[in-house]
Image (tube, rainbow, N blue to C red; front, top):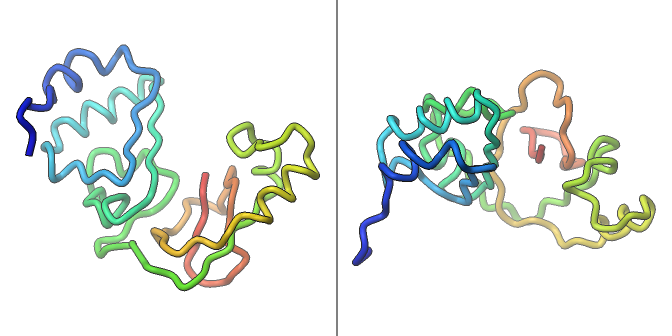
Length: 152
């Protein structure tokens, strides 16, 4: 509940073209606005804008993005049922691509960067998805077998 209404029309119909990136952080668009606004986000991305979606209880399939206007923009296949899972322990490791990608560079020294990533604690919650293709461009992955758990 908000005392001041969120300016959905202004942001998604007028100002979106001025953004450099749209970030959905554990955000279920269905709870706040219609697919009409997601269609505007899709147009924005197709015209060169950037979209970053973090996982969580309200992201990907769990957030209702299955068959939404932005589903085809994501590097993973969504499923009809929720993809959110509470895991006991999920370790991630850098891929060779991830080791060179600027977003995963926590140190300018490659070996030091690997050590930093190796020291991170295990993840306990994930959105289990299926990558498109053979996972080209993936930066982080789980060494376990089973459904893909990866970050791009």
